[in-house]
Length: 272
Ligand SMILES: NC(=O)c1ccc[n+]([C@@H]2O[C@H](COP(=O)([O-])OP(=O)(O)OC[C@H]3O[C@@H](n4cnc5c(N)ncnc54)[C@H](OP(=O)(O)O)[C@@H]3O)[C@@H](O)[C@H]2O)c1
Image 1 (tube, protein in one colour):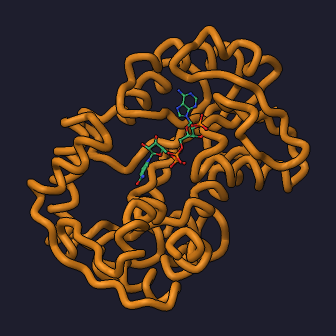
Image 2 (image 1 turned 90 degrees about the horizontal axis):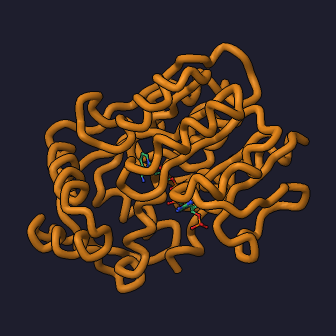
């Protein structure tokens, strides 16, 4: 039995679907089973990662866990990691490609997992292509205002992260591996918007917004000032130091990573 957390999210939904499609036993942890809308054959259990006492029955009989940590705080993660290590043999943690010494919750959770004694694999993606969904309202108006139009990223399709997770969960040889995952090519943010525009058949302009103005918008949305400032600084750096491209998706899956054009085609309806 494989327990998938974040099962209604960008990546987890594909992990669940791909595992179930391969005929494997999948249990999806969700906060609201009534709204989960997951494929037939998937066992859906209610639980909240920030309330460890709700997780015991979800972990019953589980061999492997696909773990993501929601939000920006790792405080509540210790008892959850301990519970997982008690019940399961292996965890595949959806971390992030962030500097190893950065004060991000991903690094704290990786440390907790390393110290827990469980077999682990860390998936460390760079930017998700799905982050561009945040521009959907602006794209519908034909103008996107956001900082750092020349910031260049190798955005990854959530289907590829999920496919790597499924590969790791269903094959041997990944214990103790950290996989840095990216898309196959770089595009600036302004170019990403142009690609989406082409997919939906309308011209969308880009206008650079000041980082100060964006900070206010992001603070209202995310609430966490450290994360907002860290994100703005990281995006600013990507103007002169474009995000790296790794061959890891192709090496693991035996096929090229999906392009941003493919992602935009898959999500055209979200921008119309
Ligand atoms: N975006 C990026 O560029 C990027 C890059 C690297 C790493 N990451 C990491 O990727 C992860 C996000 O992945 P994603 O985009 O697939 O997720 P997502 O679409 O943001 O969805 C979050 C998932 O977590 C669930 N969730 C939220 N709070 C929960 C709680 N208290 N207990 C149990 N489940 C809870 C949600 O379920 P319900 O709301 O349905 O309950 C949903 O399934 C984060 O850890 C992020 O740091 C993101």
